[in-house]
Image (cartoon, rainbow, N blue to C red; front, side, top):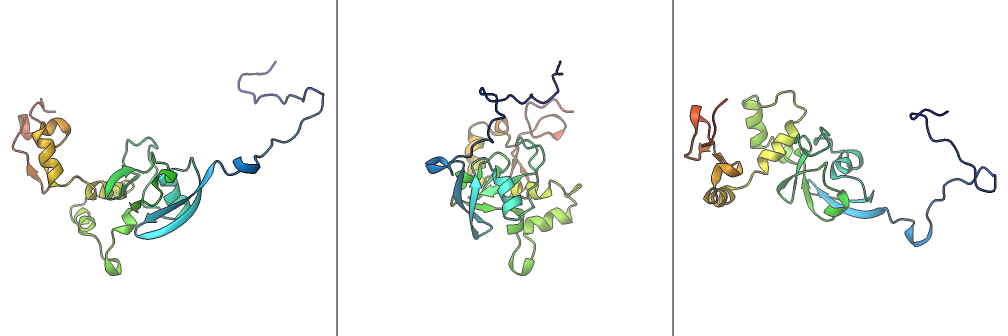
Length: 191
């Protein structure tokens, strides 16, 4: 008797023959799982032919050789894969590349200025030892650069502030509200 972990047994065709190899699609459905996509990664246009299931992260790393964004949790929770899509931060492991046709993608490789000069944010990370092990640093840099601007913070603060995770205003100034032990969250009970 077969164990539950054994691979499924081969079943012969009803006429007793071994059967044929799996049929590959042809005709109008032959390329139904692939599409042409143009990604503007770090200002450079790339025309790609991608399977519909390819994530932006995999397209960047495997097809464009942009390896700054990392595969961490593959669930959009760790932030190691964060890139900018049209200037807004996004988890590239959750986005299908074919949905981003013509969009501007910025990875950490695109931060460098003329002649390879570091972006001010990259310099600040280095000066303040914000690198930890370095694996997720590119994602953290993209996330920081894609932070909402002051107009978003002001609008969100008028709707409840820290309740929406806006305890700090860009530039490092406190929102004016604080809880016990200096925590910016008014309802915080402290550690």
